[in-house]
Length: 258
Image (cartoon, rainbow, N blue to C red; front, side):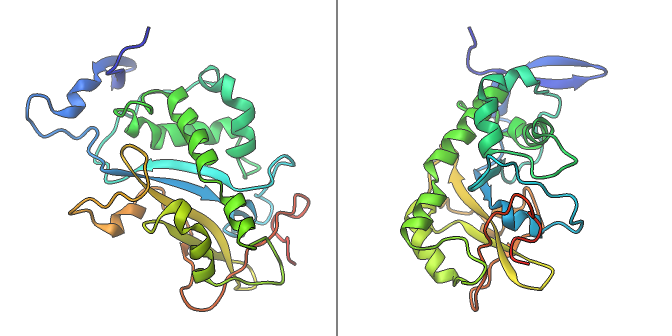
């Protein structure tokens, strides 16, 4: 039976050796680099907006079963170093595969869903593995799926009358009013510009404490650092003016509104 702390994998030549994760906590009083992060960013993206972020119109695909907000990743911030040799295999997520394919799909034709999950685990998940509940590939993905359920963006927006449209643009203030009780005031609404230079809603970055709760405001945290992991083409949606919330078009994912 697995015990806590779990083993962390570290590279030593061509072999992966086991090392105690307890060292991450600095029990000997020395400065440690593992588990140095203070909060995480849970990122959800809107498929129609993601497609607008791509330069090549042939790259994007939205699977037929995908009709709502999808997971981009869960990213520890301010990480100096993390274990980079803890692999994930298809068997690790087999029991979650159906749910992951629906809520964490790859939106790139050139990248399989498992390749996407593998990248997210190796770049970000392994950095979070010093925290119970995230301390294995299976637990990391299970937690992400639970967060997706908790942050029911579709339901909150629909209740506020904010629905995908090619005709109606939205103001940031009305979107924040609808989402503030759900995602807190440390989150960021991000947009991209489409080929017609329209501002289009792309994704939401939700700041969470180490115990995965909203509203953490640790003294000394630099708010700008919350976005340092998982950089993308997204930028904060305009505080003044409006932006679009494009509908998903499975047949024409890159041009849902012409």
